[in-house]
Length: 60
Image 1: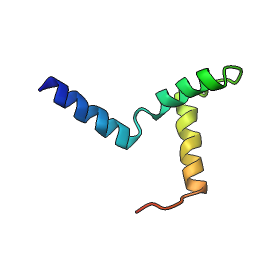
Image 2 (image 1 turned 180 degrees about the horizontal axis):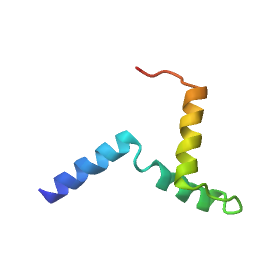
Image 3 (image 1 turned 135 degrees about the horizontal axis):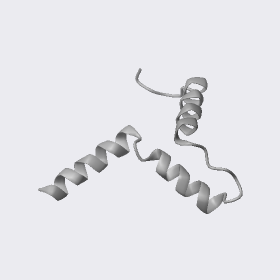
């Protein structure tokens, strides 16, 4: 039962983007170690600004 709850929690987190900053940090450290890593606040600020500037296809 606990495993199922953890799986659902992980899945919802993936859908909502909760893990995106951790993925960004891991990518930056492995592929661009000479570049500084953005703070989590700055990461989300830039991400939302990018989405607002280039909305693409979305329902809302």
